[in-house]
Structures are given as structure tokens and as C-alpha cells.
Length: 186
Image 1 (tube, rainbow, N blue to C red):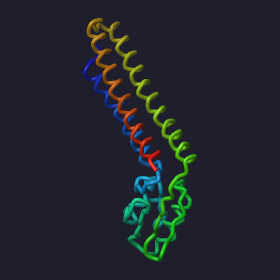
Image 2 (spheres, rainbow, N blue to C red):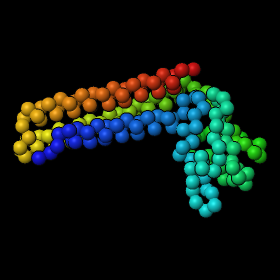
Image 3 (cartoon, rainbow, N blue to C red):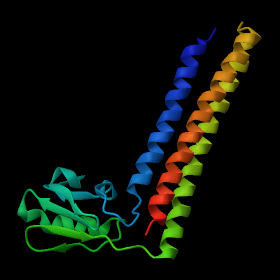
Image 4 (cartoon, rainbow, N blue to C red):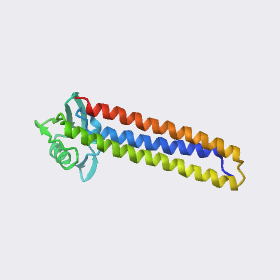
């Protein structure tokens, strides 16, 4: 017989992971403001291996439209520039021999709408994942009735599962509303 509390806890953990994934992905989307998270996917060739940018340089945001990258080893400035150019960041780096600067351009109205669509696709994937988790757990609960779980316990567990599901759907909607507002704010 299954442990209902443990099953619901695992469902909540899976839904939480989906929400964290969404939050992570939304942070990487450039909304016209400087954010070091847009460089999270950049890998730099360093002494024969690819490492994240933040392991070979200090990445800071001196103002709302600039990201500053100061390599720990000056010899790596070219490698860092190349890594940024090869990544999907879409910004051309400028360097003065010591510091690399990325100027974040103000996105056009059309670009903002594209970004909102991109965010909505990611959010929809997250919602599908949350629904899939709910479906999986519902199925487990239905099978548990055959293994001796009472129907009352199963109904209570389903109600609790629905509450958890609704909580994470609201969280996804809130994250999307905040990101859409950030993107559309000029």
C-alpha cells in the first residue's frame, strides 16, 4: 500500500522543480535590463576545458544597461570574448584590454512581443509538466484503491493534490506576469 503523504510530498517536489526551472529560464531571457543571469550559459575555453564564465572572471552590473566582465587572467580576454560571440546572448562585447563590457540595447516593441511569446512557451511547458505530475499521482492513487487504500482517503488525497496543483499553477502565472511586465516596461 502506498504512503499518501509521501506520494503528495513527491508530487509537490516535482512541481516545485518545474517552477524553479521556469524561474531559471526566465532569468536568462534578456528584457532590456542588465542581468548577469543572461551569461549563465556561456562556457569559456580555459586551459583545455570549457568552464562557466563566472569561474574565470568577475561579472558585475555597474548600471542598468551594462554588464562588466573582468577576467582574473588577462590572457583570457580573447577567449571570453569569443565565448560570448559564439553564445546565444546576441550582444557584441567591447574590450579595453582589461575589462569586457556588454551594452544591453533597448529592445524594440516587436522584439519585446517576441520575448513575451518565448516566455509564454516556456511557461506553457512548465504548466504541462505540473499537469503531468498531477496526472501521474492521480493514477497512482487510483491504483492504490485496488491495493487497499480506502476511497475516502483517495478522495482526500486527490483534493490535496488539486490544491498543490493550483498553488503551482498560480506560481507559474505570477512568474509570467512579473516577467511580461518587466519585458514590456520601457
